[in-house]
Length: 338
Figure: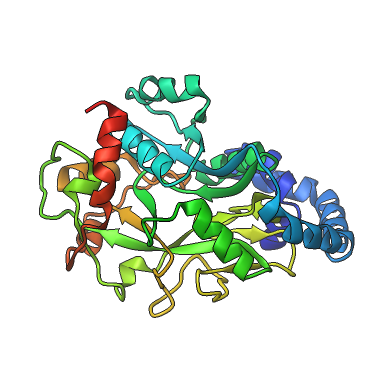
């Protein structure tokens, strides 16, 4: 029942039910609203399989060549990550992201101060969004903000750098190519490529992309989780996981770069290909950084559960030396005034 409510009543789910943090009260609301939820769900189901199919076909045929205010926007939720946020923004600006929707989950550091110059330039739209377990709510709020004005939207965290495999191409060029190649694609899912600590126990000075140059093999199970970039008009949101999108209807697809259909938050080897695009995931960085990350808790969990240290040991992959990102270092430093 909960799955059907999320799938067909997702607007009521986010705009009413998830705004109630107390789970017992939320259960009562489910019972009280049950007749309305059933009715709305039925109407949405009928609409998705009739009129909406026509509208989706029009969107699929026209959006690649339409003009948008933003070609590529990223939605991110942050919590006490000011140390790294400028590098993350400047890197992604270099590869083609032109708008960032930053949702601050209650930071107590100088995140807002570091973002102010980007806010003033219109590059960043910032919203303070406190509360436990709010990652999916922040993603949904971001989707609503950019649905009309952005051609593509990615839901990407601060420890994730989205990388075009061909450095001569921007991310938008890669996306245009893949979405045109697969006409029914609504979502491009991308596997993680997990980078380890490179032996750093203490947080080093300098850029993330210079300090962490060792990563997992392609076949490592640590790479199996996905993040995605989508046509925002064709998804309902991240309803159960930040790694997977619910589609507007069943005629469209969530695919990886090779056209393999994605039906879950993960995609196992050998289907996790990196020929066109990849997500460098700097999971823990140094041991010092990772201890601070674990202490913050998991923003997608309502209990803010803290991870155990064996997760760092699992994700501290350093088997392959990879200098792919160094070509961006000088550009980032110039933008940062270093």
